[in-house]
Image (cartoon, rainbow, N blue to C red; front, side, top):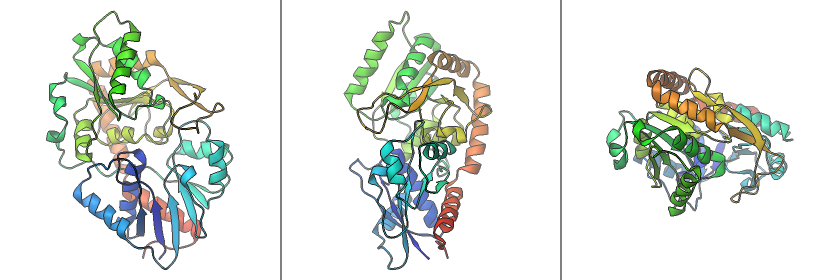
Length: 370
């Protein structure tokens, strides 16, 4: 039985770390010999004790003297081709991957990708090695729910709460969401928007600047910015305490927060382009219309290039959808339940582990379980 050496962050709050946790624990539960190699400069997130125990056990496990394969669950700049079979596993959000990624991907034995959108983008960008679809996955939400774990401020909010969970970058479309929300709702609407993000006081200053630029003729409905590092239990409660989830993203490889909301039956509003459309449709969510536009350079990563496109969601249509969901909460709740049934059935860690093991066996002609 060959050992799977999984290189990837596992203990922080990033999407990559969340995905690593799901995949390696599912492979371990399936009987695979998994060794975790995890390094991160980011603060660790508080995890349930049983999850942390498993992850620490897999990290402490020694490499086997027998056959091994390596999976690099990072951006391609951090992939390494070894003598033993080596595979990359990553995510991308625009119409074309960076040129450097094409060269790096073609040096690997294969690349695992979490959406059909990404498969098409990598192939059309010039990647010629095997591309294997591995579905995203999440553990079942906590049972029973823990509403008492919700951040205390939740209890003082208006009765209808929109939630957005995302990093504070242009790709997430927070500017589009804020403008649509402020222009559509007044303080009399008994609604609010909660944005769970990461940052410092600069984020609050930017929110105020954006609001002043709108020159609104009314007092807008409130927006709450949550900058705290939340535990998995707190995040579960935050999703469950919300009445709709909204992400006006310009591009997603998967959209893990979207999947988190869908698995809890929270109605989803999001841009109709990207990896999340593998599990969303007109029957289980609300798609924001969009047009494709050239990607702007991003200060935090040089891989965004002028020859790439991403989605520009319609602010006016988002306004209409937000109002519709507030006014038709029964319809929205039904869509949320349809999304929950679909995602719980098709995006479990065990399903993903089976897919990974089948892909690895097919690519290496080796066995990974007894």
